Structure formats: structure tokens, C-alpha cells
Image 1: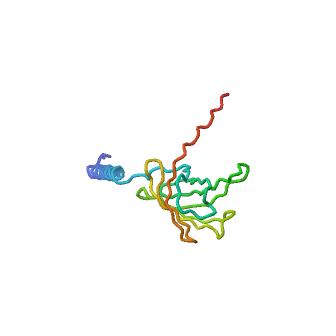
Image 2: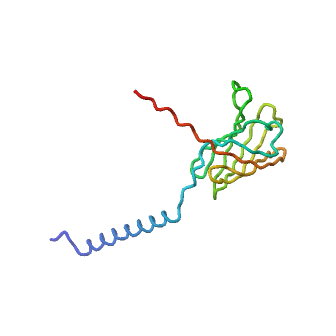
Image 3: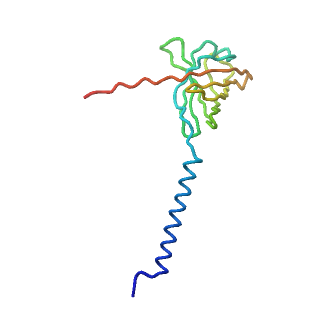
Length: 159
């Protein structure tokens, strides 16, 4: 009695070949058609902004973005003129698709009445963001340029 039956060997040969062929097709498709979203994590200083709400005019604004695939989370940080005062933040969320950033959020800031409802739409140009920022509540819209801020390397502790 032989353990090497022709039917059994041919079945296993076809099964293994089918799995290898399927693996090759899926791998080729993934390498050519599926691409990860570009990395836009980081802090961006709004260098040029037109037509902001009055309570944000003349303030130093940073847009901090954290990315998970195409999903974006972040905040618009309003730096206070007094260095000892705590910065105010408006939380934002949105998507990053086809090099387009679309984020929105709302928050109450001191000196701003009513609550700000911001919508940011822009695109990445080199390392900067260029687009439109809109206060949905007042329908005020303006253009912005946000410059990417290089993070400072942390000091390495030696033992």
C-alpha cells in the first residue's frame, strides 16, 4: 500500500499552485494600485491669513495635525501675547484625500463671540499648506498659507 497516490499528489499540487498564483496576483495589485497617504503630521504656523474673525486678527496661530491614514485630527492653537498665559485651542478633525486637507471643528475662545465654527480646506504644496479657512457661523472666508515647522531634535541623554 503506497502513501503516494497519484490523485492525492495531484490534488495537493493544484491546491499549492492555486494559492501561490493567488498570492502573486494580490501582491502585484497591492504594489501597483494601493498607496499610503502622504505624511502631513506636524505643526504648521499660519504665516499669511486673510479675512479672519476679528478676535483672531493679529494673533499667532498654529495648526497642529496628527494623521492616521487618511484621517486627520488636530487643533488650531491661538498663542497668547503673554507668554505665561495658556494657549487656546480649537479641536479639528477631517480627511486627507488626493492631496486635499479638509478639517472642521468648533470651540469657544476668549474674546470671540459667538463660538467659532471653523472649516479648513487646502492642499499641500511642498511642505506647506495653502488653502481657505472659513468661519461657518459668520460666513467669513479667507485664504491662508501655513508653513511647516521643523521639530527641534530632543537632546540625547548620556549615561
